[in-house]
Image (cartoon, rainbow over all chains, first blue to last red; front, top):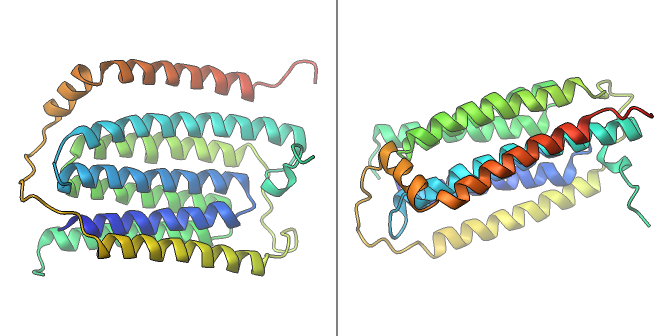
Length: 101
Length: 170
């Protein structure tokens, strides 16, 4: 196994997530896609921790912190979505245009 | 390249992960999308095991396939979703095509960079990291970030409760 295979897998997952963020109207699905992108970056960190120029366990520590941030992001993002849903009555991301001037 | 078990496992896990992600994008019902994403995240734990990070793999299953998926499914169940075709707005083919082109371009650039400029390996064999090493690193060198992360989790917990609470005067 080499480093490039894992980086390629991470790139594929990141691009699928990016496509989902850009094209999906449903705000819940946009949150899903963001989770997918965060996971792709985690794979990169762990792959460099094993196959990097200087193998080090620091990549795994960073991945743990990234997991914590992603969990907090999911919880707060969903709470904001709930508040917006009560306000607007929809989960369509296109309808959330209150900040439009 | 010789075919060994590690390579086969990598192909199977990455195929499952990419397949789950593609299904997540293409399915129509939101609950099916959530299940496909949980499946993709579960197979990513296998990738972590291949990378000799078993603690991270277990944490990944607990946090992502457990907690985050359940949070997302609660989010789906507490909101109303259009399921029938006549309720959905017509798909924006031009915009989708443009997004696909942009994402494909980014993907091509990343792959070109990865394979054109491979990372120089010094031949240093990575030592087999144990969970003890991870704990020692986390609680010695990264003690303060660890505490800050716990404060962040507390703030996120309180913030989520305050944001999602129904206001009395509504």
